[in-house]
Each structure stands twice: as C-alpha cells, then as structure tokens.
Image (cartoon, rainbow, N blue to C red):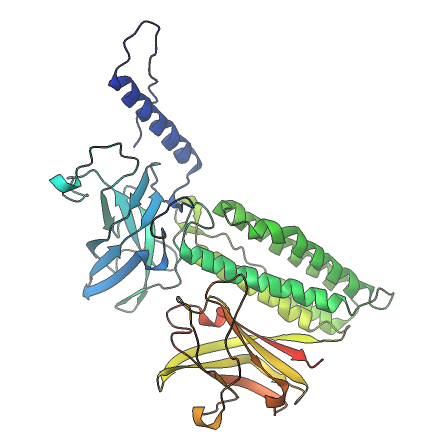
Length: 460
C-alpha cells in the first residue's frame, strides 16, 4: 500500500543532494497511486508509444494444465496497473505454476480467476532475484510478479478465467481481461471492432430502408422511428469509434446508445396500430432489457466483465436488426440473414464451415447474390486459396471453386468477404450453408458465429 504523502522540503541555501530527487520521485509515485486508488481503476494498460512487441496480445497469456489441479501460466509482453496504483510491465517470457481448486469461486456464475500480483524481488510471493536481474538504472515498472487463484489481499489483477463443469476445469476462451482503455488489449480491440461492424450493419440497413420510405399519415410512425434510429446511430457512431476511450466511458456511451434505441422502439409500440408489429416491438424491448455493465468481481464496481458487455450489446443490436426486418414499408434491396450456429471442422486439408440460420431464408433464384463477411477471422494474412460454397449440406466434390473467392475488407485486419453470384443461387429456400475455406481461416478465434455476416442482395 502507499505511504503518507510526504513532500520534499526545498529551502534556499540548502545543499541539494541525490536524496532530494529520490524523495521527490517517491512523492510523485505516491500521489499517482493515490489518484488511482481513489477512483478504483486498475487493469491492463496498452501503450501506443511502445516500439517493441505488441503489449497484451492474445498470446500474452496462455494457460496449460499439467495434471489435475496443477497448471502453468506462460506470460509475456504484459503491462498493467495494479490495484495499489503500481505500473507493471513484463516483457520477457516467464512461466508460473499454480493450482486451481474447485472450492475457489469468485463470481455468481462460479468462475475461477487467475490473478497476477506485483511483488518485491526475492520475497515469498515474487521471483528470486539473481545478479543478472538486478537493475541499476531508474526503474519505472514493477518487475517481479506472482500468479495465484486467490486474491485475499485484493491486490491482484484478473488475467484469465476458468469455468467449472462437474469435476473439470476449463479455460474460458471468451474472457476479456479488463483494461483501463478500450484498446488496452488485443482481445478487447477485436471484440470492439466486431461490435462496431454490427453497428455499421444496422446503420447501413436503416439508411437503405429509409431511402424507400415517404412520410405520410398512414405510415408516419414507421418513418419517424426509422429517422430517430438513424439519428441515434450517427450521434453515437463517432464516440464509439474512438480508439483510445477509457473503457468505463466507452461502456457508458454504449449503454446510453442501447437505452435510447430501446426507448424509441418502446414509444413506437405504444403508438402503432399494427398489432403484429406492436408485439414484435415489445419482444425487441424485452430482448434489450439487460444492462451490459456487469461487475467482474464482487465488491469491485469499476471493473467490468467485458465478455458479458460485448455479448449483451451484440444481442441487443441483433434484436434491433431482427425488428427492422419486419417493418412493412419499403423495398428490401438488401437483407441480412440471422445466424443461429456456426461450426468449424477440418476435412481433407481444408476448413469446413457449417452455418445454420435462425430461420429458413427465401431466395429469388438467379436474381439475388449472397455475400459472406468474415470479420477478424484469422490471425495471419491468407495469400490465396480456393473457396467452395453449398446451399445446404453439400459434399466438397459436388461443388466448384468460386472465381476470385477471398477479398480483403478495407480497414479491418484479417477480415475477408466472399461473393456468391446470382447464377449459382439455384434454390428458393435455404436453412444452412456449407463452406470449404483455406486454412487457417476461422481457426482459434472464438465466438465464430458472431464474426460471420451474410447479406442477400437483389440483382441490379
């Protein structure tokens, strides 16, 4: 914990010694820690000016089960602020062994968390210091650490989460460690970009739909609702796209956006005379009635479950997209298909992606095209590769290669799209798709169904 804020005494005529500057540094550190403690902020911290390897990347934290309850954590390129305000950075690769006990559960869902602690070199909780590890220059970061699944002193930063299924302990691949800023970790950046893509889809859908409407007494409620939703998307679009927003500010803006959208749909449900549409609006309001800001740990209000936040927000936006699909006015030139499940497997040296829709889609044979969007669908660039797509469960040998299959999406790393031309749409109904993709597309990314979008577009 921090000491009292003892200021340095500077007097005219005093001999300035090295001790004056050492005490000044300690005072600055204590004030900084005090400000951090007063706001309760701690967690991962990125650094845009860092010229070395990317900090807090997906592979910065990996856990391996040794046997039974014994595990090993491999850590590298981590930077965070501890609950006591200490700035810590771990650049070299280090491994720590720890135990995971079923009796240790830190939240209402019964998860077990792995915490990283700062520690003094040579202490019981830190690593043993050797001559080669002694730093004689100015030290800006804590350099000794320990990892445990207990956090009795409340001085640890949660960096990994485990789920419990019976007697099995399973790492939670969807867990996103909390960061002070929304770009503090690669996992958080990918989750944010995926959400913003979904928000862009909603905005685009509303704009295309609105272009087909005309204000009038008969459908004035629909015209007004669509206009209001477009205004809300524009109002919150730019703030949500800021790359270095404090995480708490980002989540508050996101919650405000969802609340305003929900309010507009609720108002519409009161004023519309279409009973079917009113029921659909009420169902949408009910699907959106879940706060996205959920504390990660008991008693820590400024530390939120980011995986829950992004998943809940995506569910809410999906609900709005589903609702807009049922609006009666306008000519639908574009339609987004709702995905129920997506499963990836390997077959014959290629990846087989099986997609099941939430409901059967009707297609105008030969008059519509399909575009499959894959957002952040790999961790390395794919130079080339063949793609085959089947409407339904179709074996690889019954399909032909698409021309110019994989195209990069502008502005998004490791994101691609594939166009399925109208001449290959030879059936009027479809419930699932089978795609054969080049490896490693789709591998080791998690939440695969949320990174896929399918658009049906009428032939020009």
